[in-house]
Length: 111
Length: 113
View 1: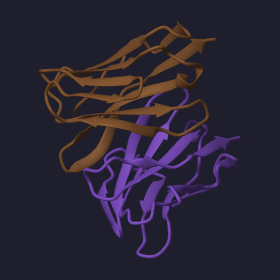
View 2 (view 1 turned 180 degrees about the horizontal axis):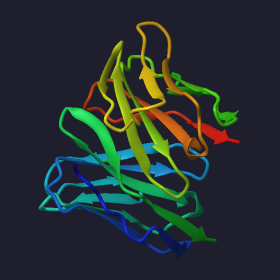
View 3 (view 1 turned 60 degrees about the horizontal axis):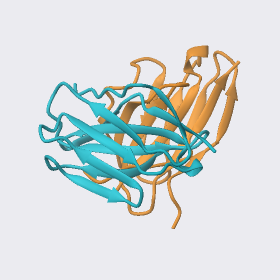
């Protein structure tokens, strides 16, 4: 089945720095979704990308789907302490919409 | 506009007991998914249900685990004869259709003594 890799598992940044993380697959993906989970919380849907090369923005967050649809990136501009949490990418396969999650990257922000 | 409701939030069981986890989807959502999350891990798919039907249970252990989504009432994930390895957070998600984003509940943290 489709698998997605997220490396590294942890990243620490100074407040105000930019942050970029990637989600990679060895196979072509039909779509990719990003979720955020705060410590002790539940995953919250952020975005879904479907088209090759697609770029979507949400305030300071920029999501991109690679041209070959084998990777995706999440970029946060000028991180804030509210950005703390674990960011997961996930893929679904066609009409069988179970999600396959990456292991996530846990972001910590030093004030 | 209530989101996905899961109860209980925390559940403690002794080895060999049964655990029942409940999930009420968002209003208007007929697709329910259960995921398990171990510490420091991503979420692992367990089962996908629509009203009265199991669509995909490929992620659920063959023994001791079962799930249902009756015509009336919440979806239930049932774990019989629990073991220490069942300790995890169990999340339920729902969606309006099978290709819409999934909305997650707060989860049930299951601890096995």
